[in-house]
Length: 275
Image 1 (cartoon, rainbow, N blue to C red):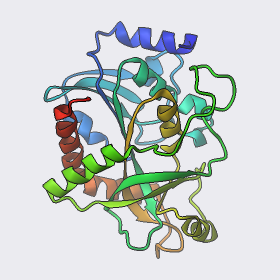
Image 2 (image 1 turned 90 degrees about the vertical axis):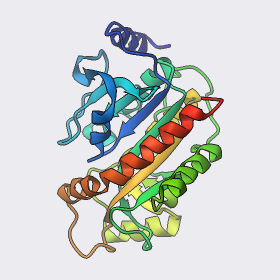
Image 3 (image 1 turned 180 degrees about the vertical axis):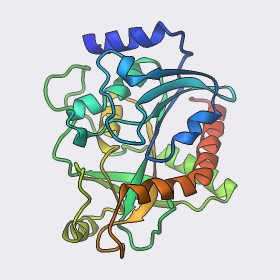
Image 4 (image 1 turned 120 degrees about the vertical axis):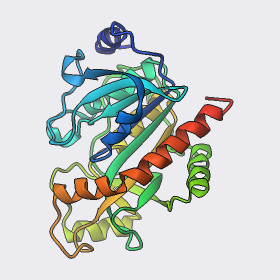
């Protein structure tokens, strides 16, 4: 464990946070889930040693520890992005913190642009795989968090957890798309030519986050469930210019079915023998 990670986790433990079994990253406009947690202890990222502070409007940059029913949870409310000027290793530091605190599963969520023309704004997409074209990797450089040097990425979103999410969505009658998440570094939205390229490469949705987090989690041995909220159609598919307001407005409209899906996943994980 790196010295920076020891400092961060020691600070968090001083605040009597409960044990962590499940960790959730809440994407743009999806932060209201944190309000449903019991016995919440809220820590600001700016107060945690070595923690990269979010500079994006609507991203509060908080770690919230509490319970949902009987499951101890840690929530990241407002992630930090690579485009803010941090390194990929810095923006995934919270993954190392959550793993060190005992998390057994990580749920990552995001607001994403729809590239698959069968999608529409407001859809939820179960992430099946990913394409990293951010031209960076959080594992680049010295091994601060131990081996492996070359981690396998053949199943970054494990099949058994994808099946669990599909079962929950079916039981709750929540329409759920499946697809491949493509990531670019941002912060500008993609051009129509770049979107055509993403289509040809096989991407169904495009994000400016998440993929570095999944790489770090995979390296740490932390299984990942990934869910995107399709908040807009990408440039060249959408008939109107893109804006961050559109992203947050659509996420707000989709929050009820998103929360229903997340709470159903938590219930199923809580009943699992290996959780």
